[in-house]
Every structure is written in C-alpha cells, then in structure tokens.
Length: 389
Image (cartoon, rainbow, N blue to C red):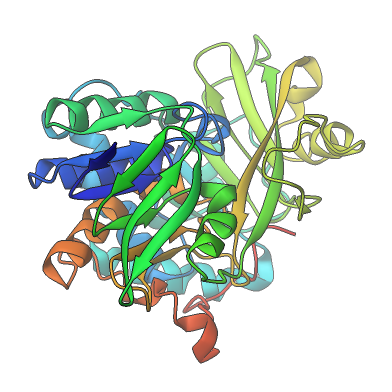
C-alpha cells in the first residue's frame, strides 16, 4: 500500500528534524524518512557550537535568529531539552585580518548580535589561561556557547510527532517519483510514499538522493576529526573559541572535558557510509601542538576519545536552502559543518519558502541552489577565506 502524506522529509538529522517540526506546526501531515536512526550522521558528531560570528551576514542572521528565538528559549518554543550552555565565544583572527574582523562585527551589531571587538588585555582579564601573543584583537560574544545536537534533534522530532508527524527509521529512499515536472512521492525499503512535497535533508547522502530525482547537487562528503580531551584540573574558565591563527577550535564539554578539532586536514570524497572511523594519522599530534600555543595547560591533559564525522560540503562551503526546477522538491543540504547552529531558523525559513513562497524568518535567498549554475558562489562581505582546508 502507498502511504500518503502532505510532506516528506528525507533525513532525520537536526536539519530534517527542524523542517519536520515546522511543517507539523503548520498542520501538515509529515513523514520523516531516515535510512538508519535519527542523528546518526553528521548531527550525532556535531561539535554543537552556538555562535554568531561569520564573515557572511546571511549566516550570522540565521545563527542569531536561531539563538534568540530557539536555543535561548528552548523549552517554551520547542519543548524538551537542547542542552544549551552559555560559555561565551571568541573569534580569534590573524593580525592581517583585523579590518575584516571589525567589519564583520559591525555587520553583526547591525543585526542585533551582542558582540564586540576586544583587545588582548580584555581577553586575558576574562580568560587568564589563554595565551595572547599571536593576535591583537578578538571578537567576543558573551551570550554564545554550545548545545547538544542529539538532544536538539530529538526535541524537534518529539514535538513534530506531538503535532502528528511520523518518524520512520531504517527506511532508505530508493527512488523519487516525478510526473509532469513535479515530485509525486518516493519508494523506500519500507514501501511507497506519496507526497507533493519532498525535502532532501540527507546530509552526506544528499547528492545521491538528489540524483534519484535527476538533479546534480555540487557537493562532496567532508570528513572531520574531533577529539575529547580531559580537562586539566588547574584550568580555569574559558569560552568556546574559533582560532584562525592556530587553525583550530575548542570549547568546554561539561566540567570534565574539552572538545577540540582542527580546521585543516579534513578529507573529501569518502563514501557517506564509510566504515573507517580512524582519524587522520597526524590529527591528534597537530591539534595538541596547536592548542598549547593558546592554552599551555593542555599539556596537563590526556585523550578521552576521538570521533569521525561526515557532512556534505559545497564549493563555497555554504549551505543550500532552496527549491529546485522540479516542482515540490527542495534542498536543505551541503551544510558544510554549519548546519547545527543554523537549523532552527533555517528550518523555519525553509517551511515558509515551501508553504508561503517567501521566507519571513530569515532571507535564505543567498543560499539558493541556482547560485552554482549562475556562477555566483557566496563570499563573505569581509571574507576570511574557506574555513575547512
């Protein structure tokens, strides 16, 4: 038998869960089809930063709206838990990028973000255990921090189900059906599903899923290594940090651990379901060598664990939130490592695009799929260059 729905979301990561939450909230009978289990892919390996500093104002707008309207008021807005922890956030830029840092902070202040450029003296006063000899200024967001990506996803899904959505796990999409230039449904390993709306939020599988509809999405899989380190007992308070001088980022993980990862040596083109979960051979050594330049007490630490995550990455390392030439078929993919913190506002804006024709929460038109064919790749207003190398 064919099961009929108003909308089908492919993928139960945080983006698919957010879209399903907003669809169900609008009263649509929604199915979420997940090839394994919820949050099993990129979401389950997300570093979970909730920060608003980007060199593209459109991304800052998405993350600020996600923080203000969702993460900061989660129980009231969504229900359940998201695990948000306010630690503050520092963006450390190279000395030659000081003008870009200031330009981006000015753009973010115009949006309404609580951010400022602070000197190294202020950094030392706030966080005495951070060395500051390699930079002169940083952007500081006192309201930012991190959250739990799996909790966030499950809260979205639970709320969607309360509003009538159906989550079907271990359900791989094997075909997408089209008639008269419009999507009509999908075939899966658990049967046939009919719907005039299908949203591809399949993470590293999104290119394959789009190909089932005859659409070529320019993304490849991106593999990212993340370490959890034991927190040295003498280490004081520190925020979430993205450090473009030493090419890594780190944040507290509860009271006992530190999450840390590098910005380089990320692999491309592995199979989305590659079983090798071994980090690149030099990952940990390079990460520790970098981190001691900023946080010398890390030498007192030790390794707790390492995990390997995969997402889809686009040529400009920016997401795709868009319709396509196939009527009723939408893309929320190519998230390039930024999907978690943008997912609440991006999901709301996608559903407005689908149902109303124009998004009202945030203007997501810069993230349109057609930009690749137009040759108009996204670049920051005060660009730092690609994050992932």
